[in-house]
Amino acid sequence: MIYLIKEAILTRISLTDLNVLTEGDDDTLNDPELDAIQEVSSYLSYRYQTDLIFAPAQAEADKHAIIKRITVDILLYNLHSKVNPRNIPDKRIQLRDDAIKYLSEVANPRSEIQADFLPIKERPIGRGADISWGSRPKRNNNY
Image (cartoon, rainbow, N blue to C red; front, top):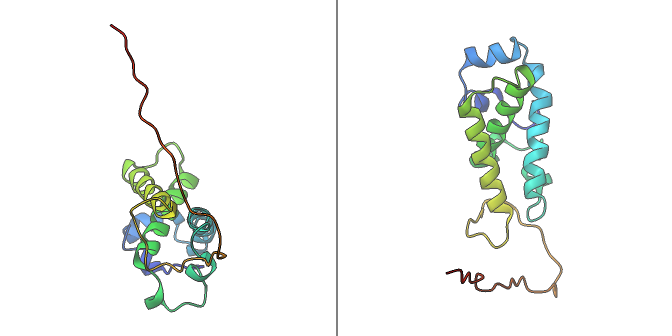
């Protein structure tokens, strides 16, 4: 295991179901976990220091519960897709979609969702303001 411990995974799936997916071999969790970490990092790396978030020498108490939960949800989806890609449970698909939606909103600087617990990257001073322009919707005058 790279970032997660088995107990964190067992909060989202039962031991018997996990053993069915891994065939009792915990080493098969390494590749799906690495994929999950890289996927989470790809969303967060623009605004946050992902090397600090996923530092391998962290104490378990210092790891953020939301990041662990999201990583576990993506890991379990990856594990299901590796074992039987045509028969992924709807619950796993929905949890992964919810995790990706949350990551997208946290990564968006214009979003109202804030992740104060994540270390923000330092930006150089004098970088332009983040301004967006909009307009009224087009009028449709069909009679």
